[in-house]
Image (tube, rainbow, N blue to C red; front, side, top):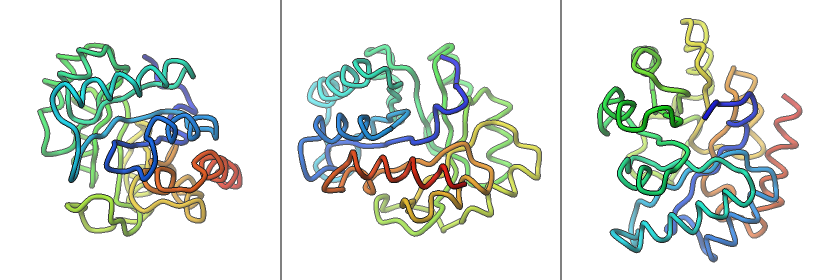
Amino acid sequence: MNLGKNLLKLYFIMGSPNCKRNPRDVLREAIDGGVTLFQFREKGEGSLTGDAKRNFARELQEICRDHHVPFIVNDDVDIALQLDADGVHIGQDDEAIELVREKIGSKILGVSAHNVEEAAEAVNKGADYIGVGPMFPTETKADAREVQGPRIIKELREAGILLPIVGIGGIQPSNASEVIKAGAEGVSVITAISYASDPKQSAQEFIDRMKES
């Protein structure tokens, strides 16, 4: 699948541990609000495993397909292939980029990067986009690295990294435009939407604020 210009604009990441309500409803409402791409990330305390995880992923995938929103799987290449997902996102501690690319063929491949060296390696080994962060302080990931701030995106662009970039970590509607102004194509969001009392309204606010960039 080709990464269109606006596909990364509002990149929603979620799994069952990230929701206080039915995740299926949260996803539907978030998509109604303007989410452009969805990543299934089933990690953390109380997360599903085995068949339960796969069946849950399939339910969310069907919601995405109904709304023509690409469905990306975090880390789990096997589930991505079983479900014929649109792509996979991997971190620096996951399987090697080139091996994942070989397994998934032309599907979307996203790679987390934290500096110019990691970003350059992602480019050279076949990534379609780079996830960069944390942009701001976040409590969603217990193992989150030191906050980089939007300046790291500027550094990547100045170093000649042309691949699409999406910022992640602590992003709220109030600071989303900083990430875009730094040179990113979009923002990745978890709890700012998944915990929102009105996910649709929250997603709409992100879209509106980024138009100001």
